[in-house]
Length: 85
Image 1 (tube, one colour):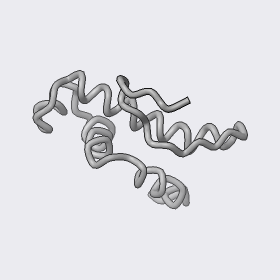
Image 2: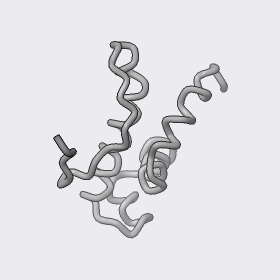
Image 3: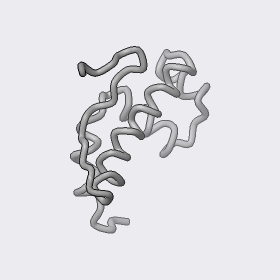
Image 4: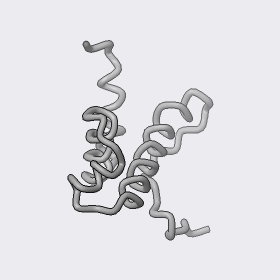
């Protein structure tokens, strides 16, 4: 089913790392648990949760924020990384 939105999502998915895209695919499309996804990727459950949250943040910024007039298409930063001020 193509509702014409795939053209808007593809550029946003390109902003994600390979791991972030794979985590979303396994969690949202394949409906795997965090633990199952971690096992598939050879990662910890915490790494999967972090990658998923970062990926969803990037997608949120590209889909929701523009509707509010605040477009910020930046890759999510790892939790321990702070942007330069």
